[in-house]
Image (cartoon, one colour):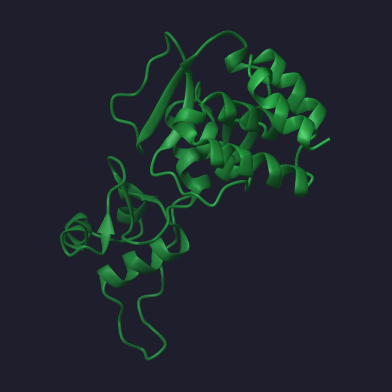
Length: 215
């Protein structure tokens, strides 16, 4: 997560003192996902947060986390928090597509790969959709990005597209095809790399017609 938010000025443009509720909402406008302790450190009482949840202005996507109702939680904020709590997880599939800018869908869970014997946190900070993998499933085509100061493992564009075809029953074939086309059109991927990874991931037989159609 990012550093704790600074306290906002206690008055608005007209000089009226801001209430704690208004300050909390303003902080969450700037940073879509915040921990309870960050808000408390910024001078917001826990009782104020509880009332905002009850009134339907805030919601808790995970234990000790707050965001505005109706506001999209920043994808990068959510995956950074997952990586901070579960550093061995690899962001993949629909969440990786979102990170790479190859889908308009907004997943309500963070899709991750985790080793078959690895522990999944009992109280994850956000909802997880976990896929157990092993071998090169945890190493092939994976890059590390630093988000909010947290190292985050994410499947690269080529690996993400291949895996979406491989798991098309969960992701949706139309989503996978659209991602491949968009990545090619935006020059975000090398089709030779897609071909190579598809061979390694045993997805080439299904993907071949789509790759050949793109030349």
